[in-house]
Image (cartoon, rainbow over all chains, first blue to last red; front, side):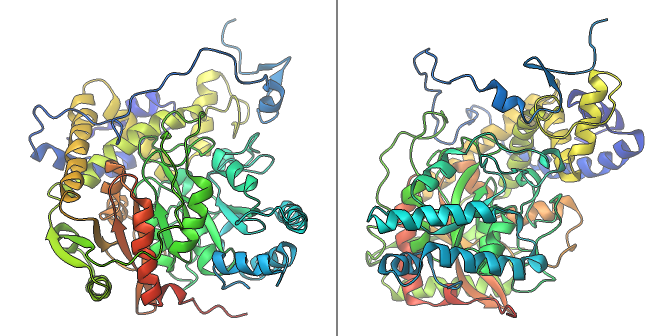
Length: 95
Length: 483
């Protein structure tokens, strides 16, 4: 399946990745060639084959619902670009 | 000291021939002298290394040193190391000081090892040549015009150049085995889930696995003893007994059944690689192994399936880099959307963006079944190929890569670069272990023999590799580095 200019811009928006119109044009070319290679998957009939999402077919183990981590907010916020009073700062969202 | 194996260094430390401080100091000096030309390290942690070494020496004086006590290692810059920059080779994390240690780092520290620093890599482990690093490409110590392979190219080059006796890498589609092959060292990708991924920056979570890179299979076995095991902090790590990987290294190989996948010796394989690999197989025959041809019929679908699954997982994993909690943030964002979009446009390199876009596209509405679901179905067929083969043979052998190391800049087309991983990628999809061992030189470029085993067959793979290394000397060849 070929990828169109509009698909690239849509994916870029969904991924919140800034891509200019000119850059999108270049990605159309790159991504189309990658998808062309991926299209080989269509050659084989996989009717009735269960999808494999974990190589050992493991299921998610559950642990007891209890607090095991200590509060390390200050440590983790030390590497944040902008914080105040224990909160992460971003541009105003609601006026 | 720089060309000794980990096992030899361990014996030297135990015998008191030298201290960990002497060993560490000599390696740090070597890094200073040679790494500017190779670029295998992103960060050298000199102070910490000397502190670690002194602590290890003190333990040894008290008679409390373990097998790995005082041995220096380097970590691919994808493992979180507390208080030390952990960049994943990306501008996005250039300013990121990890607030905790990865489990595997913690385990190796606990074993008394010394951390020399963090090695260069393709950005977020996406690449097969180490040319995708924000910190510049790594040069192959065998020839500075060649790539070292990727994505764990810095780790492979550091070991090959004698800057570190061993290093850790990660392997999502061949990122330990292919650079090990290109640099003439030994690299093991363990079974998926054998080693904790906690604190290892995620690329494709159902494929990523850490592993040791060193001169010999014996060295890899020593490291595996400390690295493997279940971790409550990684729910995909497997709760299964960890054997002593060094115990059966010398077991004779009489009657070993080796399968040669016919698909791994076809079109695209360089003749000099094929002849070196076939020569290695003959060595095994002389050691009492039987060789039969087998088929892995879905091999040609491995790269297409991988380039759906890995980018899909990556697009989700990399959504955390949003300029809010850590890492790069753009200047003066106009609003929240601008903050996200510009931060990510500035912080990620070209290949990472391509994979985010592919992954987002294939997961998006209207495309999911045709791509992602289909790729997961094919993934099951690929795994079944290996399960079927291992009912007939003990191990599979073939080349680790279709060619020897190529020139820097030679593969500008992304699809051409992806085809590099033709013999390694299916192994991650199937979750089985694989090891690359030095098996020859062609035009002074190392060739890697890849050996594959069934799930949790690492101990046997290490045995099969070790016996070969007792019979050959390819693993002892070193690149010529002007002192």
